[in-house]
Every structure is written in C-alpha cells, then in structure tokens.
Image (cartoon, rainbow, N blue to C red; front, side, top):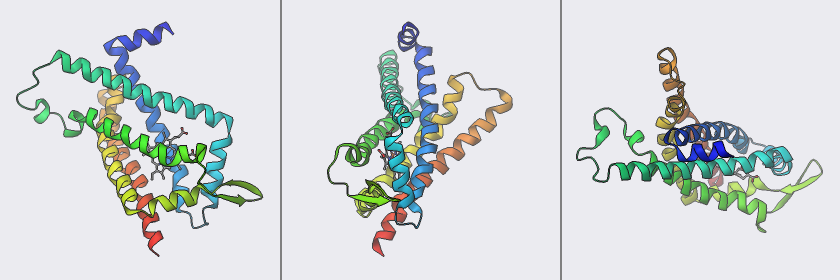
Amino acid sequence: MNWFLSALTSGIGRKVIMSLTGLFLILFLVIHLAGNLQLLKEDGGVAFNEYSHFMAHNPLIQFVSKANFFFILLHAFVSYTLYIKNKNARPVGYKVSAGSANSSWSSRSMSLLGTLIFIFILLHLRGFWYEFKYGTEVTSTVVNGVEMHNAYQWVADAYANPLIATFYVISMLVLGFHLWHGFSSAFQSLGLNHVKYNGLIKLAGKFYAIAVPAAFAIIPVLLYLKSLS
Ligand code: HEM
C-alpha cells in the first residue's frame, strides 16, 4: 500500500496512475462497445438481454466492474490534483494561450473534457446501471426459459427520446476529443515512446478516438430512428 501512497504524492507517480487507469478505461470502452452493439441486432433484443444478464450475474465481471468504478474515480481524482498543482505553480496564467503554437485544443482542454465525461458517466450510470441494479421500473422478459430484465427495451425507450439521444451523441463527441490527445499521451507518460513507434501510436490513437466514440454514437441515433418507424 506504501508504494501506492508514494505514487499518489509524487508528480511522476500521479502521471503513471493517470496513464495506467486511462489505458484500462480505453480497453473497457472497446469491450463495452462490443456488448452494446448487440442492441443493433434485429432480434427483438434477445442478444443484448442475454449479454446484459450474463454481465450482471458473472462473479468475475462483478469484480472487474468494481475495479472499473475505482479506476474511473482514481483517474478523475488524480487528474484534479494535477490540475490544482499546475494552477498553483502558474497562478497568473499565460497571457497568450500557451499551446496555440504547438499543442492542440484537445490537449489544452483535457481537464474540461474529462469533467464533462465524468458528468456524462454519472448521468449514464443513473439512467442505466442504477435502474438495472436497484430500480423497480425495468420490465422483465423470458429468454430461453430464463427470466431476466428487458434491458433492451429500457435502453430503446430511453433513446426514443430525442433529448437523451442527442445528449449521448454530444457526449461521444466530447469523449472523442478527450481520447484524441489522451490515447497517445498515456503511452508517452509511461515512457513507451520510441521514435520508431511514435507515429504508429499517434495514428492508432487518432483512429481509436474517432472510431470508438462514433460507433457508440451510432447506437442512440439508430435506435431513435427505429423508434419513429
Ligand atoms: C451508446 C452508448 C452506450 C450505451 C448504449 C451504454 C449502455 C450501458 C448499459 C446498458 C449499462 C448497464 C449495464 C448493466 O449494468 O447491465 C452501462 C454501464 C456502464 N457504462 Fe455504458 N453505454 C454507453 C456508453 C458508455 C460510455 C461512452 C462510457 C464511458 C465513457 C460508459 C460507461 C459505463 C460504465 C462505467 C458502466 C458501468 C459498468 C460496470 O458495471 O462496470 N458507457 N452502459
């Protein structure tokens, strides 16, 4: 535990924690996306309901889920302490926006983008995760003889609301900007940047930052359009 406390109190340690938790969350998003894409199957929600039921009842997944929540909080908390530290080190601020010459808007706005994503996650968990776990309004269905939550119907009903669907699409845009800088930055902070691979890591980061949020965003758009027909 001592190593963890030392990491939390050193500048380099905090950067390493940011990178490792960030990479874990990058991996989580791919798995989460793969599961969510089942919402688009034309099977009346059977695949998504089975997937959701499995996720909610598998002990290993439940353990990883707790680790996931911990890493989200740690990532947010450590980034906040780094933000305060940087602000105190430079109380007056730059007269000319520091990065206008050699850093992108997304790299200068990581704290703002991260805060918006954190708010999105809180609302997202309240609307889906909390309702599935503790709510009483999610209806039930029977799939292959097993009674389970009709998670598909709950999500489809949510995205039938254009305000909710739009909120998700805008949030995925914010997520994309955060990842645009965050993906390669995580590798850099871990010292995993070699001249030979830098270009490849940057390219992979940009591909991920566009493809993953775009694929997430397609889900509310298509379910909203489906609700109209
Ligand atoms: C269209 C996009 C998305 C859909 C349809 C969706 C759907 C869901 C659903 C249905 C759950 C509840 C799972 C359950 O408890 O059975 C869930 C949980 C969760 N979602 Fe999403 N999600 C989306 C995007 C995102 C994004 C972009 C993030 C992060 C930035 C995210 C983070 C989470 C987290 C952290 C959980 C809790 C997972 C756990 O138990 O560890 N989701 N999502």
